[in-house]
Image (cartoon, rainbow, N blue to C red; front, side):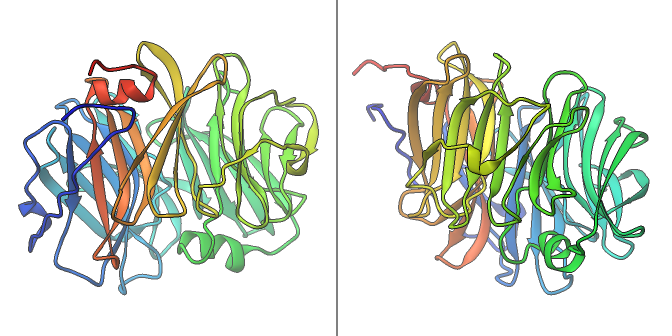
Length: 395
């Protein structure tokens, strides 16, 4: 098949009674759906990382009737997408969306289903406990940073509080900063978010240079706002109806930014300077409206090296149910190209990663028969990924 400006895939629907019996395509690239026979379960993929054996580790959550909160669900595959093992837990819920690398191992932050305390858990077949983090409940977002792990959580013991905590990789607290506010948002915002009910607010954390932390959370203005932990600056949202849904620090000191308005439209700024000592409103940011993106779609930013260039990717769900990936030059912010996955089937973006061979692994939620939420993995070759980075293939 001749490769042209876009990627073309055949969708292989794999039926099986048990997920471990799935058959992956032997070709590279491949597409695989992780199916099972329990139509009452609904799966949502959160993160994917390639492991030392060139296979993949997938962090997801599973909704069923046994818990008000989504259950932790892990899949480990070989390099062709064949399932090696899977694990779910009735006690661990609401994973905080990131697999955290520690040498050749991975871990994640989640919540205990009965005490609502926060746990650092190893992403292995036993879901081994690394640490129960004292004094931290209702975890909202976590990401690996230079010191270990940045964690955003909510506490209501002494009034409404947003907490930003830095942990080491053993789960020990290095520092915590509290942000008090008087509005009670526990049930209608925090619990709804952790139970994945209604609009899924974009809580996130990150680091811009060593120790320069930021988070998107609720603070004293009662809005979902981007806050810089060691500075006085922030970008305030409009209550919980409009705000930032993702940022990415770039090599030139600027940020790629996506934001949503009250109607759910996504706007995008490929390079923006943020003064971290100033307070401004999300209404001050203009950007380009991404007309094809589904209202309130999660926006995933990832850095990559494609076609020998430092680039970043922006992945989202389109209004017609495909996964869109666009590529931008990291230094200039210029648009390079875009592609789509999921033609002929309804999908939602989960996450993506660049693989050791230079390709891409794209994780999505697929609706089998238009109804049953399942996890799907696309794996591209290096040449296919390099097309997105501007490579022109010979006819």
